[in-house]
Amino acid sequence: MTTRQAALSLYRRSLKLALDWAVHRHLWRGQALYIRSLFEANRKVSDPRQQRALLAETEKLLESWKHPDPYIPPTAPGGSKFERNLPSPILDREIPSFKLFESEKTLAFLDVGPISKGHALVIPKFHGAKLADIPDDQLSEILPTLKKLAVASGATDYNILQNNGTIAHQQVHHVHFHMIPKPNETEGLGISWPATSGDMEKLKALSEEIKSRM
Image (tube, rainbow, N blue to C red; front, side):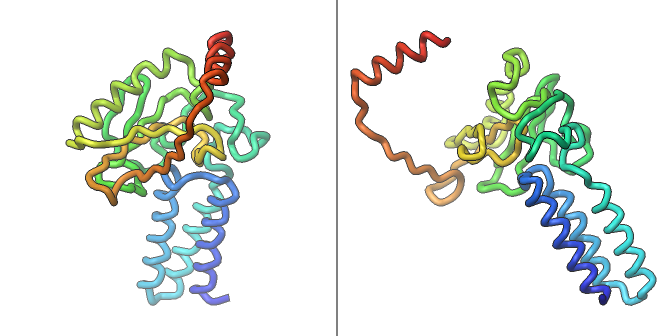
């Protein structure tokens, strides 16, 4: 196998790990970009010994990634069920991020795959997969932080987005909120909302059912 083939093989393995773990670009793109930078450096080196050394460094790094979140037990497929509430790698500063704001209970940083300028994320420091997994007191700073981001971004129109569950488009299994500026019709979040005309009797019954569980 040539050096180039070995580099491509390693890069494919790193991408496969990300797919196998079903993790989102927000957390792991930084690592992928770092590995890619090593491959780019390899291409510019003519000395075979230096090339092999770079490949060895890359492979060692790749082999150290046992799971995207070391705090999620291996018995939790895809990170969908948390057995412990400990900080994630991004909170431990193990993954590169552009921090915007930090409070006792929240962390805000830029989305590395933004859909508009100023697209940012706010996460609670308490580790939970879905909103219902986070204690009320750990959510108290989320909206104030989102408000600070919206004001600081200068956006006059923006969306606040939070997804729960795979079929609801959640890809990172740690609760996170998007603040997405909408500067014009083409940039930012696009939403299709197929509204229907509700049956008032059914809505009344549903409201009573939900209220009984509150």
